[in-house]
Image (cartoon, rainbow, N blue to C red; front, side, top):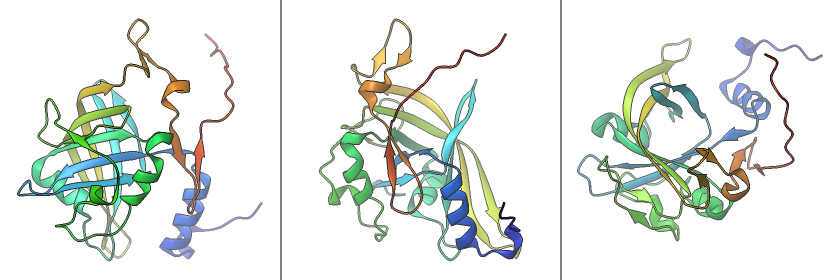
Amino acid sequence: MHILDPRELTGRDNYKLMSGSVVPRPIAFVTTLSHDGSVINAAPFSFFNIVSSDPPILSISIGRKDGVMKDTARNVLFLQELVVHICDESIALDMNETAAMLEPHESELERTNLTTVPSTVVSVPAIQEALIRMECKLYQHILISNDEGKPVSDLLLVRIVQYHFSENVYDPATKYILMDQLKPISRLAGNDYAKLGDRFTVVRPE
């Protein structure tokens, strides 16, 4: 076994090891509005998961660059609203285009073929082509700092206030998501992504 002390590694090296070990990771494709409502910001984040189902809470960790908060985090803290979309194969390439570093007055969606639709509860528009979208409101913001006290990440806990499921990915009788229809993608390390592969079922012991 290789034994490494994370305290002796750079932040970049820890990122490489963590992003290559904690796989596959779901992708939160997030839309937010600028403070004046003039710009729709869109960006993908793979430091993303479920925190609680009652209440329905998601976590999204948004790294800072040189201590500067990213547009998504800043917009969420100002407006307290966002829409989280689950990224599937059909929108993967467009999702990747929104990862570009643009100025705050520029919308990443202009680099894509995606279109937006109004949300039903929050003021933030949603991506029409996404098969699953979740309107959310900010539940809690946790600032993550490094050992030198420098802010490095904004952890957002957000509460789902409305679900939207495409008819072909949701079974209303069972209330289950149909994975073969959703075709979600996940993040690996570097520039690599993964499709949903072989599955197996294991019954939990009582």
